[in-house]
Structures are given as structure tokens and as C-alpha cells.
Image 1: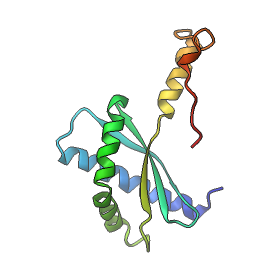
Image 2: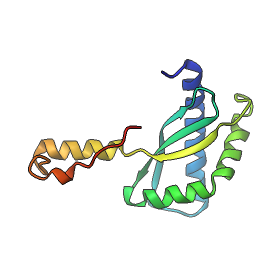
Image 3: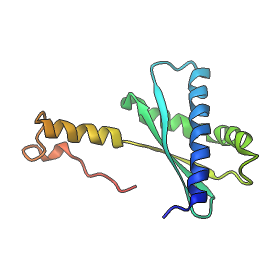
Image 4: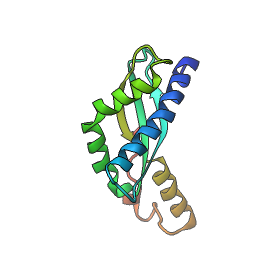
Length: 130
């Protein structure tokens, strides 16, 4: 279970990280891609922050994730500058794609009868536990 401290730090990081990522996209001249930070989970020892990113359109998500991992040190530094009054030590960042919206969409399609997972079992791929 997450402590209040973990939640508070996660919230601070989530807000600042969202701004930083949007600024990076704008500065790089990237248009037509929306990125939001849906959740930031901080480990109990506060050493790692797992950021779950929602990227639209989702077909660009994997490429964008690779780019973000390349400039991760720059992002971490910028985040540390913004949070230096609130955090003594900046946790390491890990980026993940949050596919929960896509998953919900698939379920809704199935419920509406557009796609039937019972007749086509390959429609619903196994979801990894996060």
C-alpha cells in the first residue's frame, strides 16, 4: 500500500513531469501528439518513480517512449530543478505506457457487439499486471 508521503511525492512529480514532457514536445517541434502523465508511483524507499504515460495517437507511443528514455537524464535534471524545495533526492525515472484507456475502449467495443471476444478470442490479448 502507498503511504501518504509516496502519494504526495507522486502527485508533485506527476504535475511537473507533465509540463516538462509537453514543453519538450513543443520545443522539438512535434505536432499532433498528445502526452499526459496518468500516474506516478514512487517506491517505498523513494528511489524510483514509475511514470505512466498516456500517448495519443497510440501508434506513436513506442517511438516516443524510446526518445524519452534517451533524454531521461535531461528530464530528470529539469524535474529535480523544479522540485528541489520539496524533495531532497530526485528518484530515478522509469517510463511506462499506460494503455488502460485503450483497454477500456476494447471492452466497450466488445460490449456493444462490434467485436466479440468469445467468437474471436485473439481480440483480447493477455494484460500484464502493473
